Image (cartoon, rainbow, N blue to C red; front, side, top):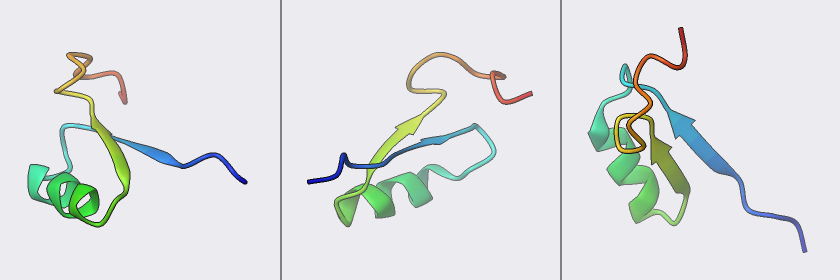
Length: 41
């Protein structure tokens, strides 16, 4: 069985997108939740 994919979303992606993905069973990490804002620059 393959490992699940986790998406890392930066501060430019609306939180509603993350919520929608999570609702559908997708593993999502928002960079602001992980307190690493600006890491995508």
